[in-house]
Length: 305
Image (cartoon, rainbow, N blue to C red):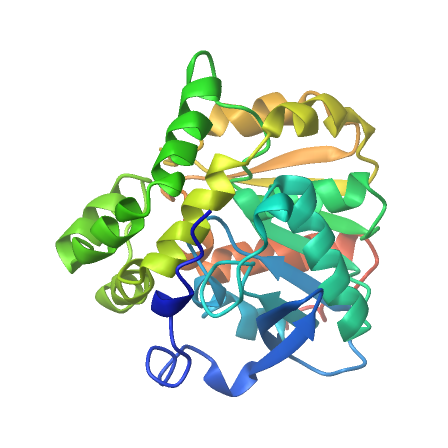
């Protein structure tokens, strides 16, 4: 399988002005070199953030500093994404990704009290919870990719992604054509609207065939059938944050997930798309902070005068 190590994002060049660069460090864990960003005070409760497919730590660029006022925030680039090494082919799966993140947390010596994931990142967190690798008091899924695609798409989508991933030309071609207008069309197609700075960060990543291959590989081996069957076993208090305009994962998907979980509720955010936490980081942060206070993880905010 292709790894495209020669065309992965370069930290000194592509990361020279990376958002929150001062919070970045590199960590060796499970045979991988991880790019990790850390915010907040070491003694604060730990909040783990996992981005979605095709993204990286830049996805939390405005959200993470807001959360750092109350939490010790840990945000890695998932394997094969951004500046983190890719997984080996035999580990390139949802359980494999979950094991890799678990090993990273072990090396970091942290235990998340709150875990928040966007899209596929939410699926990784759910897998980790079901495997009892983590046991956060609060689980936040932001437009979580927690159910298989409906109908024939559940078979066709991963099959097509696998075919594209196995073709070494595909990531290079995608990278070659990833200009700003193409990236804007891709992001707009999710129902989100990002500013030029946000689009340029995605363009920077999509211009690297190694990052594209990491995203395709993740989708190609994404078995949500097993996760879907086991979701009712999830015991964590769960909040499903849903962008009302999400076109990538339709809002009704989260409502269907909610109906199968005994400890979950939906927070609908009207006017936001798939990248709700990038479009309106303050609004999403407000939800997470409120839920953490309700759960007794954080002290109640002082009443305003």
